[in-house]
Length: 123
Image (cartoon, rainbow, N blue to C red):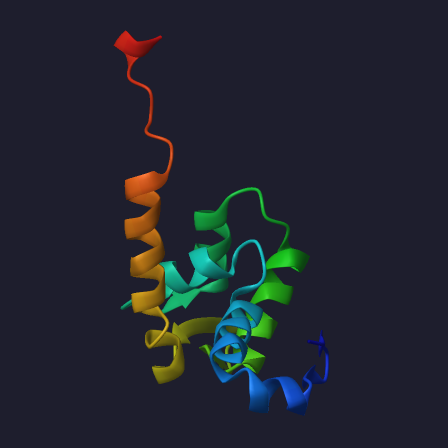
């Protein structure tokens, strides 16, 4: 199997359709912050500064890169308003909204199998 900037090998797509589908979805979500960006945009339109504030220690360049990739993949929509300074807003597309159940399943798995927060009495 070969995954590169040009996509997947046609042989792989044809012969291993189920595995391709999983790899395709994983390829869209690859990036440390993409899951959180999608989750944060669920049901809301957000400005760049709101997303950056929510994510905390993320550099402006890294956030811009993640947002551009999500936009290129059709997961989010970017709207620039002709104001000074320009106002930029992000929201989920229909395709992005279709990813939310994947994130909900990841949440359920993490809740069941992830580490539980330690309480003060456990210390």
